Length: 120
Image (cartoon, rainbow, N blue to C red; front, side, top):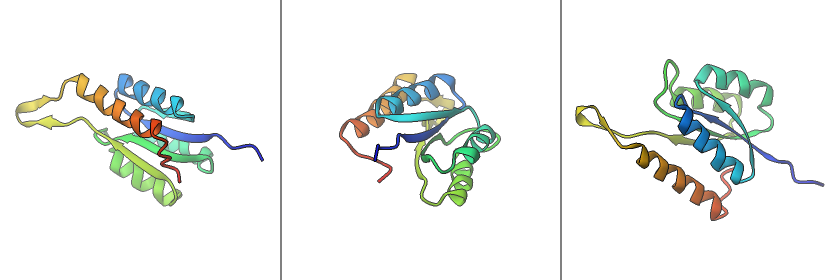
């Protein structure tokens, strides 16, 4: 029996971050559905719920944040694995530089390179 391709849903309202996560997941062997917000993610998930095994979502989105999105999707599919992504904001409104986001993405990529399968 051929191995079915793993499918992930990546959600982020920052286009460059979404693209980085998409590339990492594709390099790890996932077919990737993408969405720029929670509503679009719900709309894409519902017809594909059987095949989607992994959600990678930004936490800070509006109007539906990543935690609410994950909660709704896990209610629809309790076996769904979830990875939360976020950018840290320090006091005074200063956020980490974009390079910090890139380092996070490389660490996520390292998880897949080590052979850790978040769907098992």
